[in-house]
Amino acid sequence: MKIVGVAACITGVAHTYMAQEAIEQECKKRGIDCKVETQGGMGIENELEEEEVNAADAVILAVAIGIEGEDRFEEKEEEGRVLTMNPSEVIRNPEAAVDRVLALVG
Amino acid sequence: MVRKELVLAGTELDSREAVIDYVATAADGAGLLASKDEFVEAVYRREEEISTSIGHGIAIPHGKTDAVKEAFMAFVSVKKPFCWDENSKDKILGVFLIGVPQSKADTLHLKAIAAISKRLINDDFRSELFACRNSEEAYRLLDEIDQGIK
Image (cartoon, rainbow over all chains, first blue to last red; front, side, top):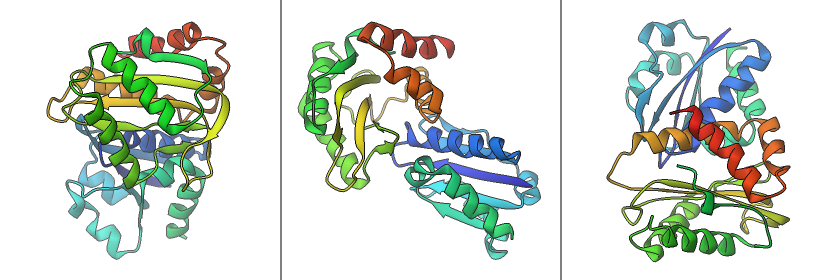
């Protein structure tokens, strides 16, 4: 199982990075391979390569704003494998967020 | 980045307004703000978009405005938990108030803020933070993270 994601909040200061950490921690707990790109005040970090996106079983977008490179996820979107949530919700309940993204995989 | 005068553990403050005003006054006193009023306004504007309570007894209000001269992250913990805002029923024990300039990207400070924010996800870290008996202990705990990223 491999999950990729992007985290981006309005100000790009705190929530972006907390959402990244929340998803990564929750996936680690469950032994799921996971990589989360951040688009925040420090620019794009931990950027997802196209191959990484293609190889992923599902995508979680913890975003409150429009993001760079959203087209990378188009194919996954068509397959119904993209979950979009507000970063605040993800931080508050990472368990539920990961449950929901896993449900996309079936 | 974490300043001693902006780390206050075990205060008697009992509302969102009281905490924000208290910290903004302290940040202004430390020369970090060009305008306290503008900063406070930016914080409330952000709060209106979506509450910055993140659960687990913590809120991270923040203002991104050029009324902030130098990025900072202040920490206040309270003796008695209080309700953060009318929309969330969250009881708050600790508040991280963050100020960052709008137009100046201050990577080192942003890195420190991101590093501390990430730690807040961790249950053990929060317990450690709330167990701090005084401001000095809380400062040391936060400063450790700050030093770690440099």
